[in-house]
Length: 195
Image: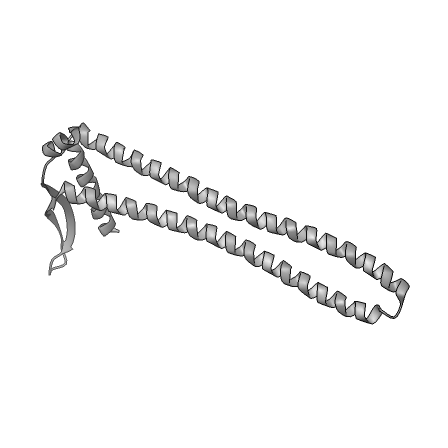
């Protein structure tokens, strides 16, 4: 109810009148310097409701862009983890094919075959352990990315609620706040035009 009262007290429209006085040195036709005083008057009509809506829309767009970037980063991390696991799987398959070809050529010598099979079994076990570790790491990274996205969504929601609460408090303090914000914005625009 206080917001409604404060909104009722807030000015509907404001007119800002700005004056800028400068002096310019000008040469007349005979070559003499002449000082000319120039005064520029500008007036601007500001509607606080539109300004507030514009500011909220910009803030909302910024938050959405931040969320989108965070989700894209999480997706990229997941894709990278999947790609690494796929590369390791392919490498393991290629190694298995190569070993199968070697076994075919070694079948002629039983002692070498036995030593080779033990060696291959040991390598296969090591490879399986390494692949399991890589898969676990990829799964942890994917879970971490999801967890971060969930944590950030809660944080973004809290920040948005705090921002809206602080804006509501700012509006209730004084209607001169609108005037100050409008004057500050007009001054920034004037400075930017001068650059």
